[in-house]
Length: 303
Image (cartoon, rainbow, N blue to C red; front, side, top):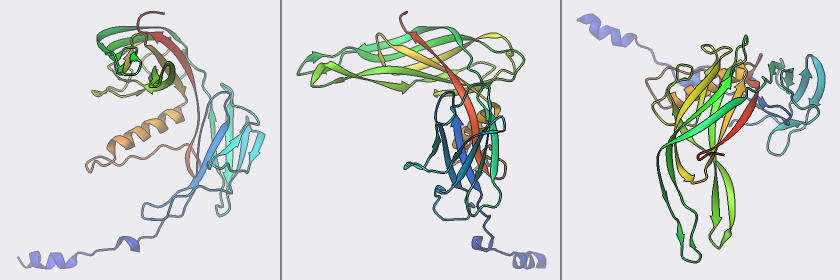
């Protein structure tokens, strides 16, 4: 019993501010796609115990290479905080690398990446399982075209390239018309994300509707494969057209996006395991990765 009273007196406590802060490291983020401007965001990391404001680095120097050959040096930061280059636009299946340095950081960070070729969608179809439409009435010029909601199944087929590791991300979009209340002949078109679920061995399963799925070709290498999506669209029109975006990622891009999603899903959950955001940057943090996309359009009621 004496030990029960002695043991608590052996405990020690330490204040958080007694732990040393980890030194900052450079952070660079760049997603690049074929024939588009290079855009780099450069910042510096902060320790989890550091309450300082996270700021962008305005005096960085970025060396851009293609197959180890220099193609541009970027030293100017635009007003929105990005470093940009149009000197040589990214191309599919070409290897690129960067070296980034800034005052106060002894070791430049380096990274390399490639733009994978896009994978075409061969065909697609939509089957409506439930729908409801209504007319929007406006007192000045009568009834507007009908809108409503659609629940349905969208199927599409693609051919996975054989013999190489392929990584995919899938998104579904719809275009809607917004009419001017003062003039029924004027309308505006905007793109919106369509939520869906997917129940297939190749993809991560989800019981909730969401807008992005990622999968690999581990089970379907070289196959012509059909995927089925169950979707809901609450702003559909009778002549609705949907846009399938099949995005081809490299492994770094796939792992980074997957880790970000896992972090968001676990954020705020006290019982979840810590999630480490994936990085392919050496001597620093961030991501340098390419991707390409194939866009396929399909109408609800035929072409």
